[in-house]
Length: 214
Image (tube, rainbow, N blue to C red; front, side):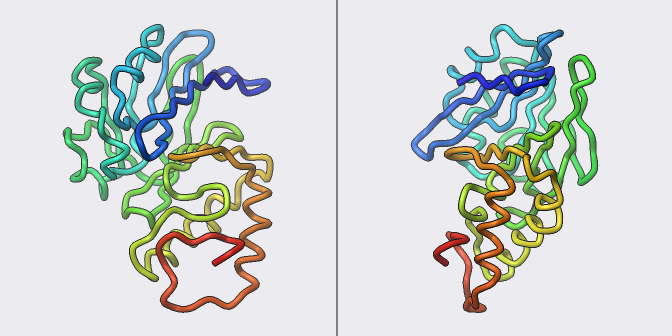
């Protein structure tokens, strides 16, 4: 699926791959054809086909879970481009990272296309989100209706802190493109979270949490 944001210098190719409905995103500069790939789930042939007419500059990983890295070896070896990830998730990749990203870093490519790097831990220690204008590629940090899955109450607290202190400070019109499933509008997710926050919750809550029903 091709997405062309209004008043934008990019187009976005969104690929739906694998049995977990993973999303891979290719962001392409409209004027130069240079691109970046966000995540590399199983389906290397589909990803490589979508990249065929672009000049790939980086593979940007949101995190290192197995369903997001299934095609990483084949794509990185075929195209010989740098792989970028947060240091805390680097050991989970099947290839050596070429670029270790931190909160506040800036990825540039094409004709002045910029992606702001946001460290949003909780789902994994090194989870990253990438912001271009009012478009956020959130990996498994936030989805329509709730945060990504967490492995302990402390991790749920951490992911909510990532969401509320970083993602919720963005423009309300920000479009969220997560690592699985459908997109969301930030203002809608903030409204759902406000309802979640208004209710009491067990201190042992974690796992698959939904803003409106947990």
